[in-house]
Length: 498
Image (cartoon, rainbow, N blue to C red; front, side, top):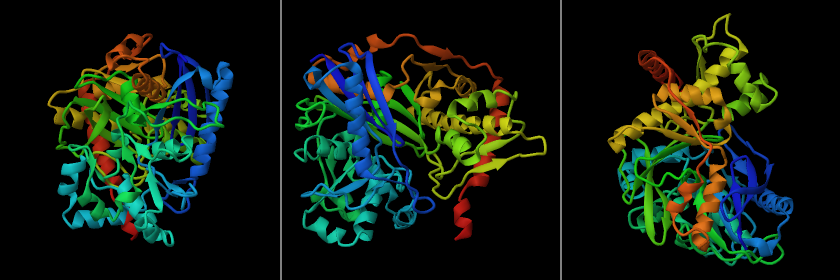
């Protein structure tokens, strides 16, 4: 029983990785699942497909590792965070598709809350801005738009969960309805200072308390896997939201250390220690993790469209055949040829928080090629991250000295060099880019006692690649000014048709 099974349930795929007792990868499996777009700005997942793909890749990873349930000391979960699922407590059947974190259908509801002067009160408790990104308005929408749902919720018949809670429920056969503070802190319903579901917030969003999961320590007991599954009997010993999990996987354990995950979106988290830091720059204050009853906090900035812009170049525009083709295409030109690409396909996240912004390409001429568009798309990702890092440095009172990176798009050397140039600090990429799954294994190792303390995790960091900044600072300042001008032009675009 010296192995850990990490379940990494992401926005576009489910992944499982088996780690040995030294947190080295033994075997893995991954499967994409269907993205549903029923209306413009709406994004949904089928909760049953989330479950079937996740348990399927777990079985496949164990088979590839040549291991059985008796070899698994603990299961750890990392999950796409704000995605909202509501299901029937008796049958376990979801009342509707999951509303994904990218979904913008509650933008008007959020606008009304802001207009009613509630933003400061909500932010003081939750550390969040009012935005459809978070779970609270998604729950309210489901209760108001699924026939009979609100009455059923009031009778205690319905359960809510982010994806971690849904997986725990399914893994334990409905025996455990729980989450951890890193996920609870993404709902707009959780007081990050007191560490509790807040009655005032529940009333404000119209969410019955009976729907909510129990909040347990991130590195703790979430029940055991039910019989009949490949890892039956194994304890679920750790749970973290995916970005907090990547922060732990990157061993950002001290205040001021930061990482950026380049996945479907991009997420920058800076460890702020034992106290939340209120942001003056429209970033988020969030729970990083809770271990042995002690909570750690982070500042966070979110880019809604990061690596997803490469998928759009592939599937929407058709200028590349595979995601790996974007780097040589972008490198085929020395610069973007004056093209600016604001990849606001799902609005703009921090520090703009503009759900009505839309993707914008500026500066096209007869000389513009697919290479210029591809390079501008990569630069658009890096510009967004640079904005977040600037804001984070102002909030924390000190600039970053390096940025640790992970996620699929972090394998793109050109993107990483562009990022280092824009930031003016080294970008450090680990040998293992699966920091999210590694964080899930790490928290499960801590929760199961296999790892004595978080400090032990630092020993495993080897084989890093460093990208040193090489651009002229005056040139970077000029390019950042152009970027800010471009985002102003993309702002509130969808509102112009309403």
